[in-house]
Amino acid sequence: MASSMLVKVTCLSMICLVLDIPLANAALSCGQIQLTVAPCLGYLRNPGPSVSAPCCNGLRSIYGQSKSIADRQSVCRCVKGTIFGLPGINLSALSSIAPKCGINLPYKISPSINCNTYFSNL
Ligand SMILES: *[C@@H]1O[C@H](CO)[C@@H](O)[C@H](O)[C@H]1NC(C)=O
Image 1 (spheres, rainbow, N blue to C red):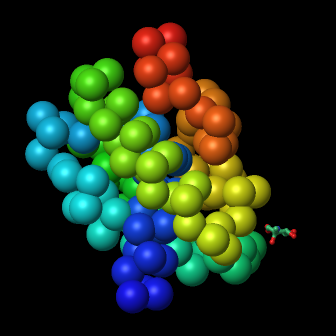
Image 2: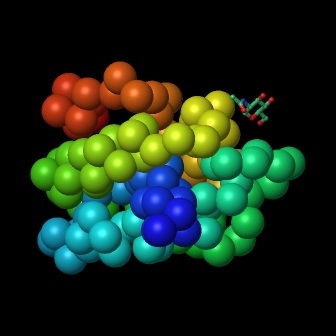
Image 3: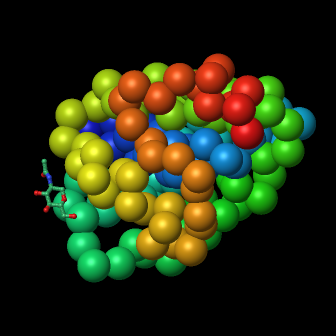
């Protein structure tokens, strides 16, 4: 149970980072995104000096599959709907995880992010 929640949180975090990473052709479901970013959960709950390779690889995978605005919005909603509802997530760690993986996002991931507005302004 707890691990499942953690996975969801991690996935969401990763997704936030990956807001720029739309799901390609909707090939990735929210559940798949969550599983892909699951390795990031540990970092989000207990931030360290670096993000694990599995976590970064998962983020890059999602990022690389983002192609349309609709896909990005789906990822955004998946992340927003999951991660911010979970306890124990360090928002500072969440906002810094993408840069630490070498992924440059033009915005900050936050609980107030508007998936519609953000993506329409890309
Ligand atoms: C979040 O993590 C940072 C280190 O990256 C730490 O300084 C801060 O206290 C943490 N915040 C919470 C609410 O745990």
